[in-house]
Image (cartoon, rainbow, N blue to C red; front, side):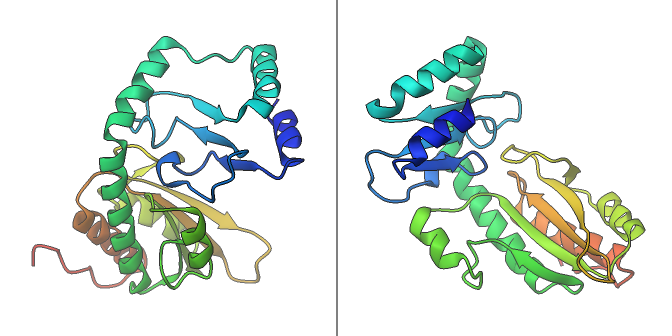
Length: 228
């Protein structure tokens, strides 16, 4: 159904997929014929306890979307609707803090020994920063950093050394998560990407936790405590 809807609306050059970002900051022009697909599972619910999403479309695409949803039998349950509505009430406040925390964490990682790259379009140094500004009015809590020339045991040691981050593939919830991914066919040295989703914990604590865990995993002297 998704492919059918996408094919239908992209013929009118008006399709926008926001399933991995947040709808609150997702702008991108004034085309009134735009169809948007948004996830309600992540930042909208904000508590990692519901699955859902929505398709926002003008009348010219409505029949196609409705027919597809009816064929799939994919209605949103009353309980899920309630949980998403609950999350929407705090979404602006949560996003503001998570975006600020992600920025502090990204800037900290940029100056942390052993980190090869930090990927976040909200950083002014990002090659995609201008494009990001054109489509978004604010950030969220997702970022990624790279580690080059490290082994799998080092990554395991890094994850186990973290005190504030849980291992998990999701994002947009209250708790901070991290997920490692090894890249293949990128040269003789091992390369890893670490995806981070920051939650609502103290920004300073999260930045310190990552620095300390990286220092431990890479065999360096521990980081300086934020209380010192």
